[in-house]
Image 1: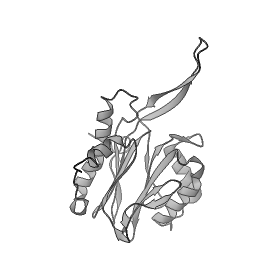
Image 2 (image 1 turned 90 degrees about the vertical axis):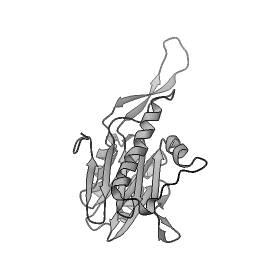
Image 3 (image 1 turned 120 degrees about the horizontal axis):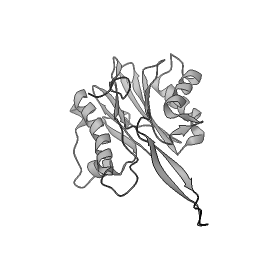
Image 4 (image 1 turned 60 degrees about the vertical axis):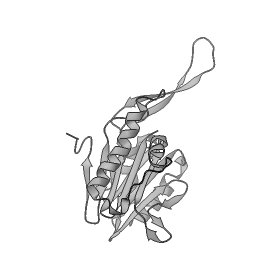
Length: 224
């Protein structure tokens, strides 16, 4: 499992994930006891966000780490080669990804984000395709997350609720907030008596009306 989040404010969309890769393994005891499953980490360098080359669209993923015997990043690379056209809209990409990855739902979830002209689009892609940044026909600014949701849900949905005004949040604050949501999940897991499913570097992708860039990336733009 992973944690990914998208923070969407008037100046742009920020996507963030961590980098831990965990797998399930079957344990077969030698003493005749029933076999069991265990989860463990095999890498802190998984790539869970991609920026497509043909269109300015970001895709993040959580859940299953291997699809069609490929890593998430390689799976999405092949998806772009086979399915995405240079004139596709964000909605087109989201719909194509839903059809392409349908056999893996609900074990994997995607965020698909980007702009068409001046309009922001943030989709949650699973068995249901949902545009999460619209409410009653109006653009809404907020944060969405998926995967290991418990820490963020406790933080933001507690009583009394934490008030975050996304409508006036500058882009730099949205970048810091997206990184914080992933980071706090990683850090709290350190103290919990369970498998640490989130960890490694935090990758942050920023999309605006004019451009898309890596704020930080473990390979392309390492955090200093």
